[in-house]
Length: 113
Image 1: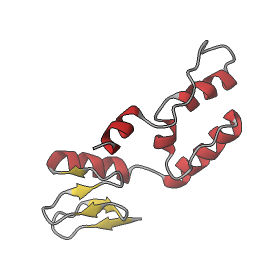
Image 2 (image 1 turned 45 degrees about the vertical axis):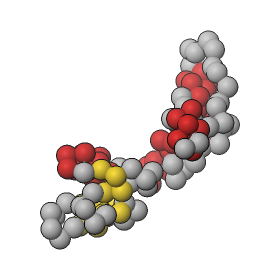
Image 3 (image 1 turned 30 degrees about the vertical axis):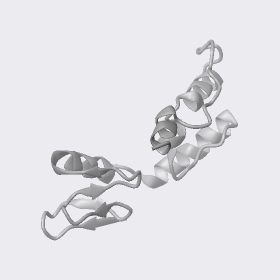
Image 4 (image 1 turned 120 degrees about the vertical axis):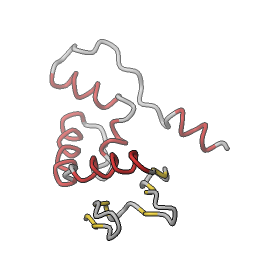
């Protein structure tokens, strides 16, 4: 769902939060300002969540790996599922695939602080 802001006329997604200083807080908790916020809004306005969900379900069917349909990019972030998809579509195209990490290394470090 998209919401138009009165002051700037720009479009933000309903799950994004505009904080008191005019920045946008993304679902991941990152606050964006200025041109970063505008770029983020533009990227989000072009996303089609229905297509993303369909793609996630297709990738999950093909690879037999769980893919979160509500967070496609997060599911593909490590590259493990993408490598499995390539090997399923084109056998032998990727010789060695590292095991899927349980957590992103950066996530582990940031959670420790």
